[in-house]
Image (cartoon, rainbow, N blue to C red; front, side):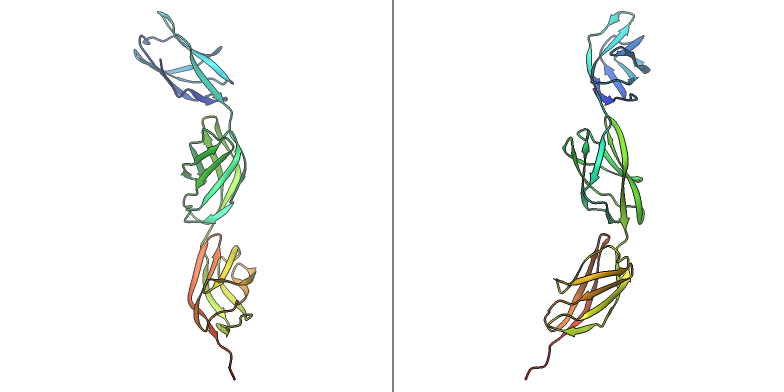
Length: 247
């Protein structure tokens, strides 16, 4: 007599279907010593809502003809989330983060606000999940759904992609060291600035301004790329390296 699912939350409330024969007119379904609420019944199945419990209990169906053999039902406690490996990312989603905690082995979904993603279970203490696209910039709650229930309390922040509007001055020595100011939008979480692929030292002034020291480069116009937690912005040919005089 199969039982599906055979596990659920210690708080109860799991919808469970038991299939077999001669089940019409079921009068009781016991999970251990507790009765379950019967919601549907046919000659070959009975559907119930599990009561609260703990550990492994025997499930017994009783009809006018007698009682069934026991089936095992496993109670699972709610998950606990300890940390996220990344707490922010682009509104477009697509980045993968790790969730650490306990009771995660039966995780079926991770909700980022109203948007859901299916996680990969690494172990009972760790999940890997690809962040879904967000509805806009801002912080959303993160909820893990398992057979034992749900847990929240952590948050994730969606960041809009940056833009780069100006670079001033727009040219400087091939030896590097030119102090330039980059203006744009959504620059507060800048992680790197590159000139033709070479990283530059920078400091964030505010969400619209960066102060940057150019690295050494080759004479000519090069692309400047600003990368933030929200994505990247490229100014094609945005800075021109100028060779010094030779004698």
